[in-house]
Length: 100
Image (cartoon, rainbow, N blue to C red):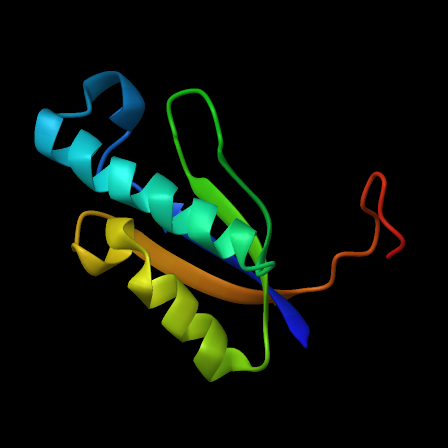
């Protein structure tokens, strides 16, 4: 199993301050998707950056790049076309409370 990070790039700066009702609905589904990944033991951590640029970060386990891309592409924020995803391999080297 390897670790991956994907970034969600929102469609504009100040996204969270200007989010529309339809975008909020998509992000509600996004949050449910992440909750499901966490419950399955796949998600390591996730959250948005704050300030003007609200890039989302998601660190998770996947067997290979194809599986990692499938996880990212299934995220409703990306699958809907609202946000752009960017996938990279990562090695979680230091995790508070972890043994990595």
